[in-house]
Structures are given as structure tokens and as C-alpha cells.
Length: 166
Figure (tube, rainbow, N blue to C red):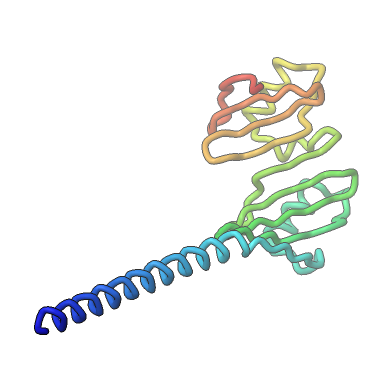
């Protein structure tokens, strides 16, 4: 009889332990699902008026693209990142990071010389005199430009030529 009571207690404790483990696993899975949802589900675009753009971005546009009008301005949030995407007349698009620094310029026409770092502009002018820069991009470690002939050139942060990018 005593053995039966002990067996019942052991079985009960095992069931409680299993239930606690299952509950803990469920809680962990729910927390992981919530984190994934928050990080991926936070992708959000907010259209704003050009008058609501940060001063730094407005100044950049007025300085380098005075003849173009702002057609669309969007603040894009994706997880922890925030960018400002601007579309100008003549099909020019600009992207600024959360610090309001330009990180990407795309155009179908020649970009203003004032938006291209001097060393990169000099390299392109010297080595590709019949071409011009239509796109410029800044990534973590390098800068890239695209020429009107479709050629992509990569430079380091100091503007030194690295390679032709495929």
C-alpha cells in the first residue's frame, strides 16, 4: 500500500514537472514569436509632406538639386532602422539614413558634381571621359558609382578606386 502511494506521488510530480516544462516551452516559443513579429512586423512606411522633412535633408536637396521638386517623401522603418526616401522630379531618388546623411542617389541622368566626392569624380573624369555618373551609393565600407554605360565602380571610403564591380 505504501508503495502505491509513493508511486502516485512520483507520477504526480512527474506530471507537474512535465506541465511546467511544457508551459516553459510554450512561454519561450510565444516570446520568440513575439520578437520575430515585432522585428519583422514593424516594417512601416509613412508618407510625409516635403515641409515636414528634417532641415538637414531639405538643405541637402536645395543645395544640390535646386531645379528639382520633391514629388514624394517617405519615412521607412524596418525593425531598428529608419530611412528617408525622397523622389524628385526627373526620376531622381535619394535615400538618407537615420542620421539624415545621404547614403544613396539614383538617377537616369548625370548627377550634379557637387554630390560626388572629389577624388571619385576626378577618377571617373580621367578614366571615363565620355561617361558620367548616374548613381552613387554608400555602404558600410565602400562607395559605389554607376556610369551611364552601366559600369559599376567601387571605391573605398577615402575615394581610392578598388575595382570594377560585376
